[in-house]
Length: 104
Length: 114
Image (cartoon, rainbow over the protein chains, first blue to last red):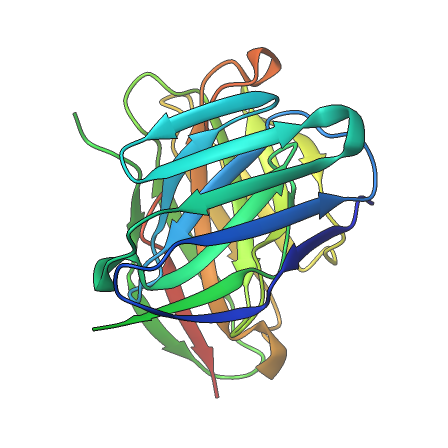
């Protein structure tokens, strides 16, 4: 199967700081998505981004499909951004996540 | 518009028992996928159902089985439970998978095997 590597595994930010999360795939994937998992376990869709760049408020994502990676940018982080961020490819392959803690 | 709903939210079972988890997809969705998420790990794909048939399967033993009903809802059954089956079980739905649409997750079912 396809291996999905996410970095960094853990991240602690001061409120207001910016961050970049990365997702690398061992092979080409379709249906690349980013999710945020809240403390109660629910996975919330952030972006469906098989290629190109999208922005939604303070979040944006870029996927370079030819190089098999995707980036998630979080600007002006807030405490509510805390949680675990996952990327997935083909809807079947998930990374081990980036655990983000934003401190006030 | 109801999202993906799962039941039960929490349950405790004894090793060797059997468990059934249920999922109703988001309105308009016809494809249901199940995932197992152990503590500190990413979701692991179990299988996917479309048109009442298992279309894809991950690397899980036959103790894990499923079903999809004509109304697109789905069940996940796990037989002969092991302690290692303790996890969050997530259901996700989507529409017309071949078009690459977004998948939506339910809140999950927390299973503890003792």
